[in-house]
Length: 320
Image 1 (tube, one colour):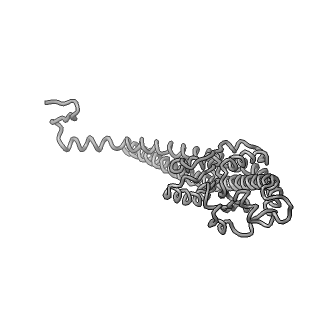
Image 2 (tube, helix red, strand yellow):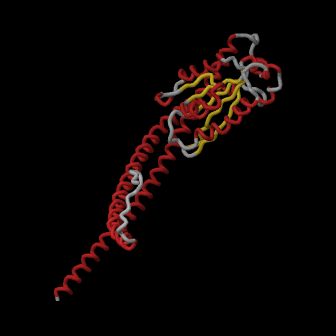
């Protein structure tokens, strides 16, 4: 019984006839594949060269942006360093964690990530130090931990497993052409509204155009700073005086501005290095593909000339 899905077989054809038919149909397929391979190689060469042009353009843009980012970073460091160093804890923050005022209340973490990609391992190395802290918080089912994320890449990397800790998320930061102290006040307000007695900043410290270093800097609230630093001994104000509160807010804003500028400079410098490497790799790949294309094309031309020459010899011998 005939079934439409079953293949039709001609019983009159012997196995030898089927073998001859199969051999006869193989030759044109090889010629067709050779032509398609040349077209594919040519398309790949053009595609790789276009990618090289794009990465080269991105490298030039990053180089121009790095000059502006370094200038802004120098301004932020010159402004913030005297303010931060004028009021510091006598020892590391870890020594205060066992005190009652440090164990109670919330803990606030601030992660400075990026909005755009193509910047190497900036976000991966930063989040490598933050993820274990959040994993430990999930394991202990902490309800007093809050997280502020700056940058779309940081949000997308942490949202899946740590969305319960999210307090504030700031995106589209790459649209800010100038990193001003006034803009950092919005981030500082988000930290102060949480009223966390202590927390940490996670950011990338800019070393030079080819290197950066992930760092963690801890901070405490105004009451802890006033009660544990000799800064108050140089003044006659009461410990609850508003001047201390205002100076603490200014100091925290200066930290946010500086760490933001550090992270932006690290992002742009890493993107410049990554695009430079990509441009070099694209040039090398395009050169190798172009050489392979020329060899394949020359081999095809040689085989066709041999076939023409052989045909002419056969025709000449048969005419004689």
